[in-house]
Amino acid sequence: MSAISQAGVRTRPAPRRSDLTPGKIGKKTGFFLLLAIFVLVSLFPFYWIVITSLKSNAAMTQSTHSLLPSGVTFSNYIDDFTKQDFVRPLINSAIVCLAATLVTVIVASMAGYALARTKIRGRSLVLGFILIAGFFPILAMVGPLFIFFRHIGLLDTYPALILSFLIYTLPLATWLLSSYFSQIPKELEEAAIVDGTTRIQALRKVIMPVAMPGVFTAAILSFILAWNDFTFSLSFMTTPNMYTAPLAIVNLGQSQYQTFYNLIDAAVVIISIPIALIVIFAQRRIVSGLTAGSFR
Picture (cartoon, rainbow, N blue to C red):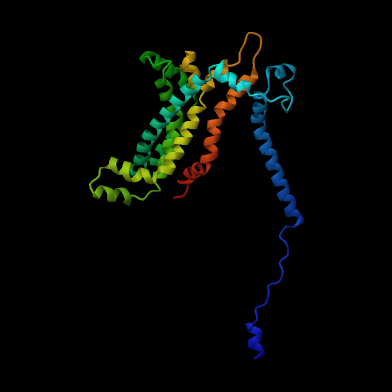
């Protein structure tokens, strides 16, 4: 009876000693300290741009080395939109970037789907070549493209930039969507084809809704790459009314005797806001889209 009663009694586990030994505490403290230093160093250039954009012309003349502005003013942002006519370059950037993103998504979706579903030899080599093409030096392409656009009359036009931006966006989007489409079961479009739809209709009505996270990721990355372009805009745009936002900053705040860096930095903050908002609100979708094709 005593043995049964003793067996029925649950023994309490011995108290565990704390896992936070002095050595582990020191390692974690050092890790977070290095992480904090890395974050501060990474954010300091942007912080410097922001505080410079909030300084008045008088403060810029007196001193440009203070870490805190003596008087905060938003007049530089107002001057960029009113006196410097920075609205037009922003509109130009929005037009060409959105158009390039739309073309990229359409072409990359069809190319990525074809690479994912077609059984061809050397598929991995084709994908590798597409990815390498995205890292080809941009300056090596400027000369041939300039001659080509001049012969067909596309210099200083939106189509010249849209076609040029595809060099940035199309290889990355095709590689990304090809990996994403490979994860979608083939039975989905096979069932749709049995019901009478064509291959293009199956792609548009069945596969694309399932692949929207990957398509959305490709669109975001394509827009960011196009928005940050400077080389192609500098090479193919000659009229100030056709300048994109990054190119317009070069001539912003310039005078005969002085460069107004507060106006320039205010414009830099303005063009950085859309990208920052996209990354902040869509970071989870971007990460999920990039990692979707990592495991097969």
